[in-house]
Image (cartoon, rainbow, N blue to C red):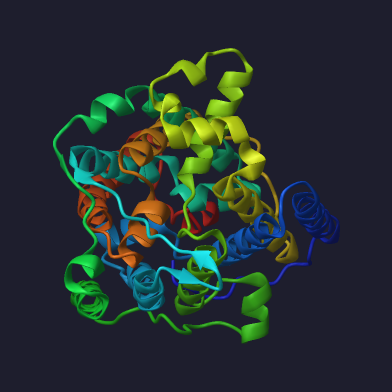
Length: 406
């Protein structure tokens, strides 16, 4: 839907207070038990949760609207977000450090696993009703369906680790960084040109179908103060806010924003605690996964940001008066959430990330695997959008608000 202001509701003071206290308590606990850097990342994750809750241009719904309805404002907002982050990332990553913190981009190999994983993710985000960040923000905002998607997402992520050694033996190229290959000024210029052409293409498709285009900056609705509290934020607000979240993550954590590694670690930690012998799997004996499993979720920067994102979305929903979990779901909605979540988790692990870790952070880092992710996810999203009616979704009604945010 277009980014029009939502009808104001009374803030849910009790829920908002709970969200604020939980966030403050977790931040203090992280400072005491771990370090201030993790507490800062919790807050950054909270800002992401607020932005995603109020931004009705969610990754999954925006892609579907472009492919099915030829409405491209949400996709153009994502391209603006990618361009803004790229402009800041390029010189920072070329420098290699900032404020005494080493910096590394989200650069991964290019191969069969990325292409297939992104395709599966594209199908999954249409059936599950959200992407990785959208699932977290929907869950934090009180969506029961997103809770089911999240549980299946975690299960699919862990399942993929059992097969990762085989997938990584399939044909692939080494990681390719465009800025490192061409130099960051030339690499950035090429990347911005491609993003601009994609935005122009989305604009042309929309105008051909509808004769006009939805705006990124304002649209109809009330003033900025009402939008800030109740939503929906103008697309440009959300795009720039999420770009700032990624830049802040890079500067604080030393790596760009990522989401789905946290899901994998959550599921593996739980399975290991229940005696499933996860630590004996080949994947979990590799150095980085082994260290992460041994350290636990409280020391994992991605897990901490995910928690902050959930709490931020909860706070945003409460301040807007829209925290209202829907406990009754039809069988089609439940089944699509389970299947979609499994595909999301499995696909994200194969593709070295999701729409955040691979697409957003990958492209902002100048990684070719991020562009491959985009090319492979689009046909997956197209296929997933056409499967939705089989589960009773999109029949004669606009997408639910929880999916518009996902």
